[in-house]
Length: 281
Image (cartoon, rainbow, N blue to C red; front, top):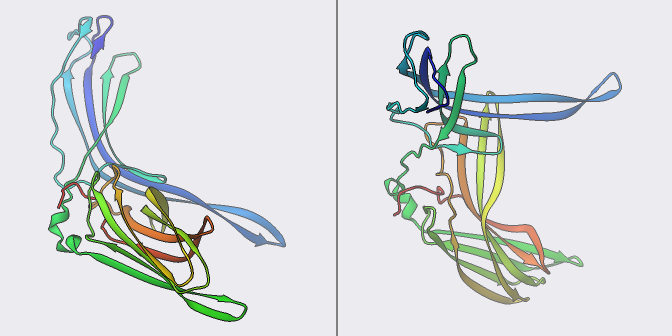
């Protein structure tokens, strides 16, 4: 702490807090007495993990003096054992902060606040299912002039369910086109799904955190196989264990494009890897 001039504080207090909060507003139109009006409902979820304080300098405001200059006050605090990792999302957060207060007699207190990061250990090796390969296959039939064509088949294969930030996800994508359309490529996306919970309700937010475009035309009665990799970017770990109001999940999502337009008629979802951990397999 830097003091510009001599101070006679009542004390210096450091407060630690760990909390999670989510909130959002939903609006709907209702009809009353022949009129339409918009009604807003606000939802909020909250959890407190700890709130501790320590007095690192004890003063009376009269006798104890802090001379001008720089001062250091060593202190420590033991965090609880089971805490969710820090997280900042669209509608909520898991946040850990420390606030220092200079208590001055007959004057406004000086305060400074900062956030610090907590990373909960999430070892993918603890769940043997994370090592299992995943294969997803979907078919789509198309109709043209009352004639039903053969199926368009999209197959996605990955060798394991669990990955960590910085690791590459090997992917094999197959398109078997027995339909009457032409496929111009495939788009692979890693999507983050965050679920926020408040009493009696929940809300989800979706975000694309990584993507790979696979080019190559697949005409009628033809097939094509792509081999590619997608690097997992720095991301929060899955699930946020010990947090009951925010849940984080990841899905590998593939769909095909037709004449440079994304199509949602045929999609592959791989809900697991249970996303991202901090311990490589």
